[in-house]
Length: 411
Ligand code: HEM
Figure 1 (cartoon, rainbow, N blue to C red):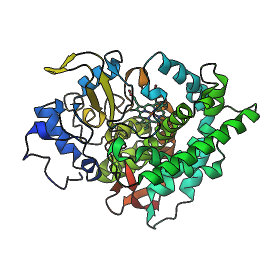
Figure 2 (figure 1 turned 135 degrees about the horizontal axis):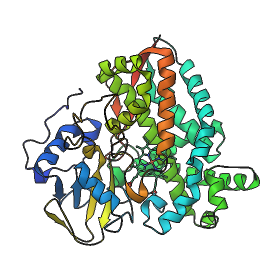
Figure 3 (figure 1 turned 90 degrees about the vertical axis):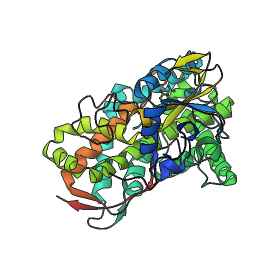
Figure 4 (figure 1 turned 60 degrees about the vertical axis):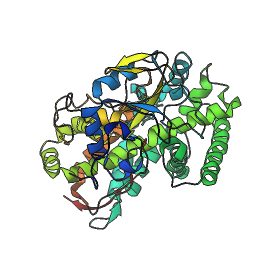
């Protein structure tokens, strides 16, 4: 396994550990730190952090409890640890009933019937991307495969012309890379604002282009067809907020699972051998990738009343952070949780898609994209060799990869 570069804050009292420090995700020291907190202080409070005081929920079952109780734990005003300086007026940051009507308006785009129609398109694109990879040469898997495939998919979901797809991961990065949101310091405020302005103006235009095309069936046309959202264009903050939710939701998450799976296969090569000998394990392995990677490290809530949890009293108004990334490594629920095991029993039992009313809307689509990717990989490649440790994202929210250099060899 990838050994953390330093110790897991063993030298400081557990109560002083700031789990939100984005560098522990970038330098991969988080597994040991969270293991210590799960053991010593699973419902953990810190008074003083760059994001103010907050509770950390680190055990699997406690996370399920918080996530399933939206009346005790509100998603408003925002679901990321920091307080946003990007538009956050969207349905993931709303409680029922407003949440429910907005989600209902767009969820048809990932309904089973529509997913079945996507399958051949996704396969065709995956084949093309994999067939275009140069054999035996260093390539960045993030750029050539993960970003490319997720952007193509998202462009289709929005009805955005495919030649504009590269903008989608850029806008997604602008939405998530903010010191106030997730601790990222790599993008200046001006650059981020310019990116978000560009995103909004393109999507205003796309709204009108979609109105002109009667036959459209995509996220924008669904917003236009629902009585509850047909006027969303008149509230630009809410419109951009929802567009960014869908861009981030569909982009970073699936993208980082596509990269995380290849990384995991290199760290646990015997698992790749097992998979090659038993391709029927692919659907199970897809769930295991999503658990092991945990592309979104956390979601946050605000307590609506005093709540007892793990012997502590969470006070009304307190910020509560559910660390999915930690719950997914909780050995009380998941055996050998640090290991990547393609034939793990109960692989679907993970936290990566959340629980309750906000449970991921695109989970079946993401699983399908990953299943097809691995089916096509096994038909072509003997090996996808990691050439060096990947560069990871500096963020306590998006748990992923900036780049990952690999070399592919044919069967
Ligand atoms: C492996 C891929 C994915 C992961 C790990 C993931 C993870 C998550 C998580 C953790 C949540 C919040 C759950 C909660 O608060 O309980 C969520 C919500 C959401 N996801 Fe995903 N997601 C993925 C793929 C996608 C895709 C492909 C889409 C695009 C269609 C998408 C759209 C959404 C939306 C719209 C929400 C908000 C749902 C609501 O508030 O009701 N996700 N996702």
